[in-house]
Amino acid sequence: MNTHTKAQTAPYRIELRKVSKQFGSTAALSDVSLSGRAGSIHALTGENGAGKSTLMKLLAGVYQPDAGELWMDGRQLRLGSPAAARRAGVSTVFQELTVLPNLSVAENLCLGREPRRFGMLDREAMRRAAGAVLHRVGIELDVDRLCGSLSIGEQQLLEIAKGVAADARVFIFDEPTAPLNRAEVDKLERLLRRLAADGKLIFYISHRLEEIFRFCDMATVLKDGKHVLTAPIATLSAESLVTLMVGRPLQSLFPPRATATAAAAAAATVAAVAGLPGLAGLPRNSASALDVRKLVARTGGPTVSFKLERGQIIGLAGLEGQGQRELLRALAGELAGAERDVVHQPVGGVASALAGGKGSGATVRQGVALIPEDRKGEGLFLEMSIHANLELGLLRELGLARMAPQAGRELEQLADRLQLRGARSSAVGALSGGNQQKVMLGRWLAAGVDTLLIEQPTRGVDVGAKAEIYRLLRQFTDAGGAVLAVSGDLLELIGLCDRILVMRQGAIVADVPAEGATEEQLLGLALVAA
Image 1: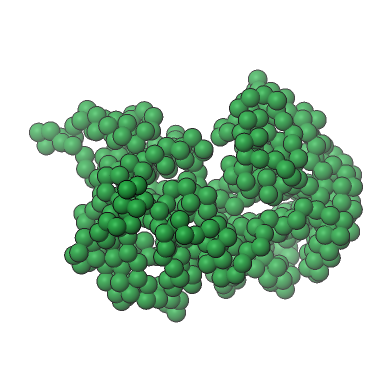
Image 2: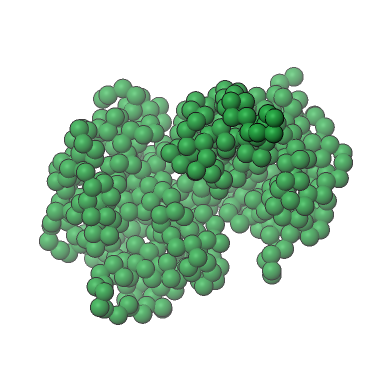
């Protein structure tokens, strides 16, 4: 009997019976029942706002249900706090990192469980315990290293190690692979399988369909706070799962690549946003948006050169840490030491050298904007409203002595075009990842920039919102804009882009058409110089 079959016949480890949760007038969960068996890797899927995280936060003790019951191993649970959930054997790795940057790796791993000797903290025992957990998880980190110096991916692996250190019976992973590279994802898969083989129940929340089908044996779909389906993963296909999640067949995740007809139609759409600067009327491929004649992102690094044409989406592919992010940041003016000979051809204007080393504000004023990977830390003002975040794009040309523009009607039209759901006065921090990403994109559409530099276009975004973001980016380029995007998702680059530049050790080693490209081809180019 294989592992998946055993999991489907094992006793229930967790049962949530007809649970409901209300936030004000919003029903986050309505009469949801869910069961998970020991030894199972159980996917929890649905669009952003479907209720996945709320359901798991009930199990993690963050929220208490307004109605319904929680049971573990045949006994009813009453979890009044996260501490109570941990004592009951529930360990959670949330999407929001909780690593304390001023503490070491060992101190973070043993936080709340510090070993003591003669009433004093036993640091040597703590270091040994932390090393044992890291070895078990398969993570190579210096236990004395301060966590503030870790990359986002390393912090996420440390979050996972903290859960394993608790030796829980139930693990909840909420988008654990969002900041991980391919090798780290492989490590996570091995860890998940070891936990399942040990009889643990793993609830796995992810928007990445390939991971759901690769890791999981069961899947539960939620929509609008209601249970839609629970079924063995072997009985589902990617197409049927997407249809259940979004409530309609998703014929194609990616919009068609640019054609003259599509460009004209998209230009008309942009022009319809009255009063906002736009790209309507610019012929596709009328000029290079960016002519990168010479770019050295880091002192002593290789020289990079390429052209980003109008009407194109170019992707930057490669293994993690091969210079993709540095290239984008150097173009955005964020790396002061970069050597640059880059010409920007603005829409309807005169070509000029792209500003460098002065921060992204200088390049934005030229019409080139960066959409950073860390939308919460770098991209958005979380306490401000949707409207206020969009309106910031209109301020890019203003001096200190000028009045801020009033563009309420135009911004409402833009928000409609972006399909931003909810009240426009809502704080951006309360939005789903997909809607936050669309607000960042909308800010620069309002600003009338002609070139977008994007890090991880759809990280932590559900499949329905991904399709909307892809559509908006293609409309932008069909209207004469240009996009340069970094993504760790090779299938995203293949489906979205016109061309893909493959990077290795800071250099561009290949320039391939996206149409017809394969993951195996791109990985091969990333590993072996073309």
